[in-house]
Length: 239
Image (cartoon, rainbow, N blue to C red; front, side):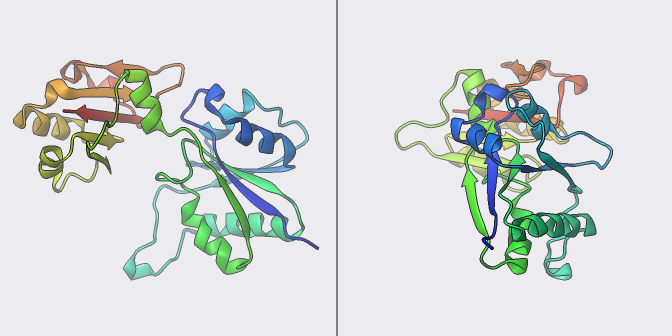
């Protein structure tokens, strides 16, 4: 029996019309869809996007709870939370039965995606695993588009980093032409302080929930209040 094929599909940042034609075709073809979510009792944002444009009636939906705490570190080897192990087992079982399936993820699968925490474990279980990654529109591209700005031209340098990594942010801001700070909600005050020090506040634009119904774009980030900040947010600094 042939093994099933796993399609890893980026469904975009929120607007269902940003799902690629290829991604939609595959979602229509497969009989099983694995859906990641951050809380056991919560809903999947990726699934809510897909449901608005793809008919999932009759398909098996595997809801995979992926705790936000990742335990891949030198002290714990490559162990993952038991809930992740359950997902590896469920996905492997269906692939071994010859079932083609899709694993959906918001944005693009290659940029800070949940999937790659599972990829190595899936390969351990099945070294001959057949995986196809279908790229999606990332929140980075969507945010820049919604703000109407270019991320880079000619020989300009672009830096992309999680905003929680602030160790050498000043150096990065001084070195690169465009700096994209992802998920700034928890460190926004610190980011604003550093931008002020470097006289770059006026060069920054804040975008949250790009492509979603409650999207927000703020070109004067000094006007933002705590209630305006969101997990799905970023600050783009363009010199």
